[in-house]
Length: 399
Image (cartoon, rainbow, N blue to C red; front, side, top):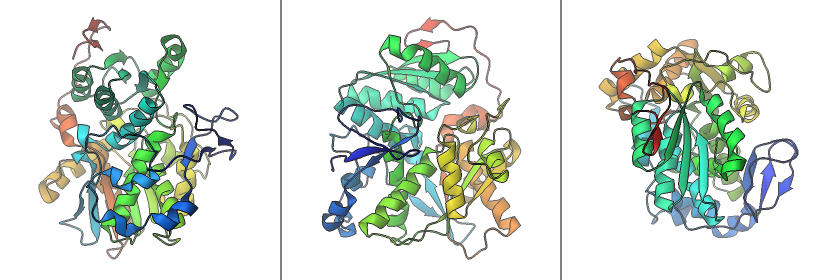
């Protein structure tokens, strides 16, 4: 593994020290990127070195922080050729530990939290990020404090509590959960590992970009479709492509990056269509795809910049389209996707129909999580509304 050279603000370009934990840029609140000495790495870290390494995301150790990994075997998920579309691939992130791509980010975030000597971690979550934090914190022997919307999928609440996390259910959206953490973290001594409020979840998720390149024999696809709530997966992959070019592993070509959101919570799509560089808070957000119910992404300016630079697109799909795509993937591809992941297929269909894609384009669709996390939604059941918050073991509220 490589020592970190510095943290870089994605807004003002300031360089920050790595000798203590950082959150966001103190000058302007910009998202921080971890930077390595890729010029030096270029001489020693070659693609051929990967061939004998273990099939996990830590095979790319030289471009990950120099610390003992807290790992549950995350990464190197299969890239499945579609049975329906000859040049389409499905990257199935539902096969990660805790059943989603969130495992990658939390593995690195918890690894570095432990390396920095932190003991109490906190995060808001619409579901899978909380599950991942709970699992990796348990493996690291750290405390996890997770704040979830009251109507979060039952599987995620049960999972977090079983891992021993302290779970608080909040009336409202993930933004309300984040506000609660912000109000309490200093008093409680929590370090916040919210989406893009610390630099290391991006590092875990960028490994999806390395894997797509390696699994396609270092020839990037024409496009990648990624379900987008907070957008860390899309942001991380774009950072990975930049690093791989600096290492001499790929050329300057980039995939068209496509974000898909729920039609009933589509702040990035709206901003993209209006030609804006940041998004507005989406009022009344509501969708069956819980992970897409993010009314405003902290890194919206990065997402929109990537879409524009790559010549990509922003697409929305309604819940009916998402659920039909979920069942179609299960019955045609044998992939039991989360609703969020199935949105990728809905977006691909729309972009094929509009002529944005042709049958000759190589496109990677990301399934971001397992359908097993959303059985109540998939089965058509309405989640019962829990009563007022009360403490039961490690969880506040019934599960």
